[in-house]
Length: 379
Image (cartoon, rainbow, N blue to C red; front, side, top):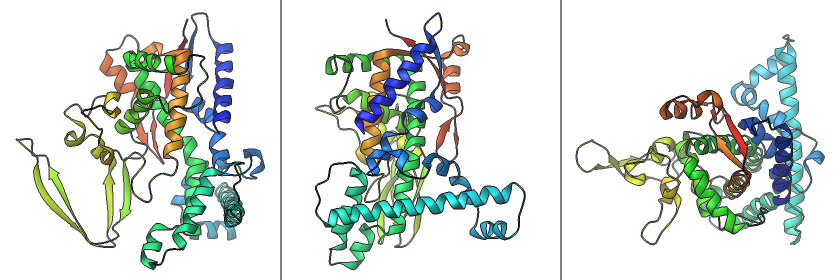
């Protein structure tokens, strides 16, 4: 996975260098660029074979995901029986793609489950899927049926997680890196801090891991805090619970009160609100400040108030992968290029530049409206 990511970034840089204009500035459409960079490596992390052997175009499936999720099954059945120009062919293609995807995923699960049961120590890839299947097998051995049902995944849930990882990791990482580039263009002092961190760690410019890149990872997290990939998340209450919470009244200390939740209730977590709550993140919660994700002797950043990857048993299975890949890509870019605001924004006041570059729209994920910055190669 790491080698595939490094290869993709290297190829991208080679293309960029060949496109540089006379003043060495490059106009970058960040989402398109990062979609290509992030396309290959995640597939190898999940499956035991390269992308070209999977038999299904994952990105095509993702492009059809809105139709599959929002259109009722009876509409698919109707258009299959009655031909409706343009709509019927599209929906038939959508169904065909998802049937093939289900078969592919179930085949991969079956092969990995057999491999795990045989206690194979294979290291040929598919680590994420292998760990997920192994964890499911371990949970299935528990005695408490209710506890087992809460912690294990059905085959349908496994399929859902696999598709979410395979398709979503490209879109989500590309969007997050697009926002990171926008923040870095607006805050050149943060770029310098990244450069100061990564140069001593990777003097030859070829990193092997990002475990020491604390500040670079903090930049990735801070972008996710201010603009999470999704703003809200649904959850089901597993047992009767009473939560102690606080109401900001604007005068004095927050007002404490309790909220009762019954087992089986559905709740919506407003992640965007939690991420900007001054109780957890301070009075400057609306400001871009990566240092808030760096632990010190006297400060530990609030893990429970960072929900960009969800939390609990069903948190994002790609959390570690996204953080490592994101920090790696950021570090490589900053070592090679300065990130600038686009030329057409440079005469604008800072707040107008900020409003333009950080404007986003909700869809399947929160996406930048104007995913553009300028790269200038460092001397």
